[in-house]
Image (cartoon, rainbow, N blue to C red; front, top):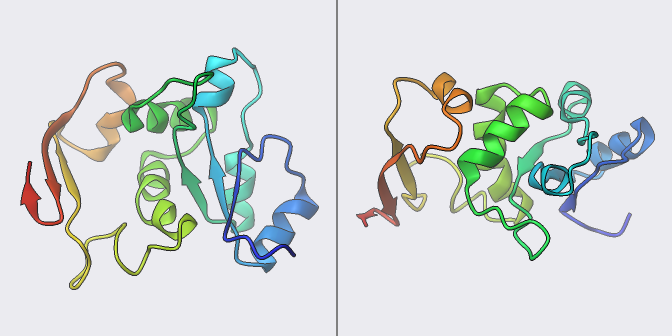
Amino acid sequence: EVGAISADHLMQSNEQGIKQMIKHGVVGVLLPGTPFTLMMKEYADARKMINMGLPIALATDLNPNCWIENMQFIIQLACYNMKMTPAEAITASTFNAACAIGLNAKIGSLEIGKQADIIVLDCPSHLFIPYHIGVNLVNTVIKNGVTL
């Protein structure tokens, strides 16, 4: 209705609101660090949104009230407290996040012609990420095809 490509937080979203976001092609951006730092019991209902077909992105909500800079921790919170699978949380942190800022033609997935922004993690599988809390699993960072 307002022409937005994304909507953030969504902690109180109802079924009607989710349907409207789907209808208008909005990406739901969930910020699990916010309820964590505010010590809230309720998180956005990612499972319901995903089951209804709303594309979900994840972000940190980095600000003075939510000083979380680690996306691995955000993925872990999403898996534990929002019932997302590791694959859903990774997609939400990469491709869907790029969609949420209108840059999915350039970044967010590994495709010919896209910018090569890649992290290599020191873990046996993506399924391992939620279970190794508090550890930086990043082994290598590649930005625009250049190893940093």
